[in-house]
Structures are given as structure tokens and as C-alpha cells.
Image 1 (cartoon, rainbow, N blue to C red):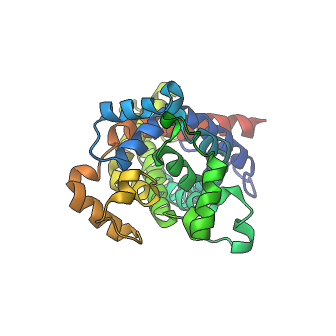
Image 2 (cartoon, rainbow, N blue to C red; image 1 turned 120 degrees about the vertical axis):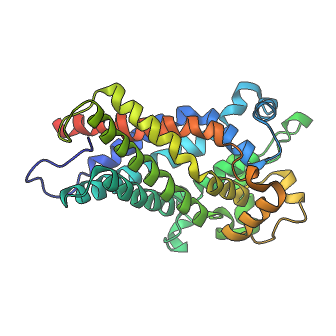
Image 3 (tube, rainbow, N blue to C red; image 1 turned 30 degrees about the horizontal axis):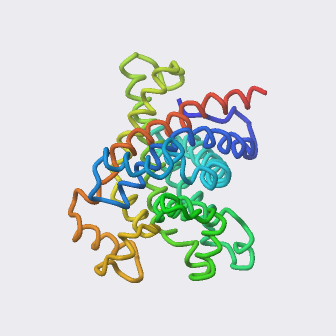
Length: 314
């Protein structure tokens, strides 16, 4: 069942920030799937095998871990803490109002997803503050790191992630490193709203099948199964992810396409992708994303529930 506050408990559970940060760090074990998903979304003519070969050509096994440092060290820990804190508080509040777990999970996930998107990309922060914080550019930098043209094969040492950030900042300023933030917010809102909501709905269904009440806990395998269902079904929003990748892409092919809008918005990027690649283009990379979604949901819903209970017991 969803984590609920003990009767009479007051205040908020600040420990959930640490729980979310730790659990989202664990999800970075799925980085190879993240790289494949991004590679296919940015290069929509590639098959899964072609994407694997392209990634491998960037450094063999290491190529599947491109962008790991800005993702694992900065983005995962910060956005995980924001997500877990916001989602849990909203979920607990709606459960206390008597709403069903699926709706509570949906609302909590949507709130947490939007909060983490803007917190880690700095949309609502002042320029004086965000220019000094690493939280704001992590999603954009991760995509740039995966999609940018590599020069190592020609014998030239490619610029580091920080050098790449400095170059983008010099050319485009704050807007450049904050690119695609609205697409990220839409993606994260639908991502975690669907993942947590569908996982809670699956938990309720499993509970009914097993003849358990809402107050009875499910076994570990049942919770993992519920999270797997939620994570897999939540990939319905893959077009939003493809739009986000295109807006943040530094692919050589993307820059050379004369039909690509000079100033990308969610709507004109959607129209561009549909015109270039059709409906299939909007779902490129969905296969590795299903695997990634399952892993992230198992970590951030099932495993996190147990960690939160353990922390509460302490």
C-alpha cells in the first residue's frame, strides 16, 4: 500500500529528500538504456542495433555510460530528493482526505514531476542565483553529452562536459543551458504521475486478486510486479521525450537539417518530427525506455516504500 503517516504525526517527512536522492542514484544503473533511448530519439532513422553500434563506436563499453557524471552526481540526487519529498507529501495529503491510492499516486507523481523538472533546471530561479548552481543544466547537459558529435575517432580529444557547458553558456547564455525546460516539465509530470498512479492502481488490483484489504501490505514480488506494470505503461508519453531530446540535441544531423526550426518550441518541434519521421518517429527509443521506466519505477516506488518505512521505524 502507499506509505501513510502514523495517526497524529505532524509536520513533513524531511527524510524523504535523502531517501529520494539515494534511490534515484540507484536508478542510474540503467544509464545504458538512457543512452540508447536518447540516441534513438535524436537519430530517428536508426534501429536498435544501429544505435547500439553507434554508441559502441564512441568508446566501447564506456560509450554506454556517456553523461553519467552530470546525471548521477548532480541530476539524479537532486531531482530524486525533490520528487520523493513533493510526491510523498501530496500523496499522503490526498490519502488523508479519503481519496483512493491510484488517484493519490497520480496527483503526487504529477506534482513531484513538475517540481523536480523546474527545481533541477532553474526555471523559476533568479538569474543571479541560477548562474552559480549546477542544478539547472543537468538534463540539458546529459542530452548534449550523449548527442554531440564526437571527435575522439579522429585523434582529437573531445572537450569535457564542463568545457561543453562553458561553450553553450558563452554562445547562448542562460537560455542555452536551460533549453527544453518546459518539455522536461511536461515529460516529468506525465512520467511520474503515470508511473506512481498506475503502480498504485496495479497494487490495488493485485490486492483484490489476492483477497487483501487496502490496509494489508503486499509482498515484495507483488510490489515489484505493480511497479513494473506502472513503469512500462507510463511510456505512453514517449512523443514528449522525443520532443525534449530534439530540443536539446547537439547531433550533427540535427544542426544540418534546413527544415528544423531555428527557435524550437514544444509545438513546432512536434510538427517538425511528425513531418520528418511520422508517428513512428515520435516513438523512437520507446523499447529501451520501457526497460528504463520499469527499473526507475521499481526503485522509486517499490523499493522506496520499504526504505521510507525503515527510516520511519528508526
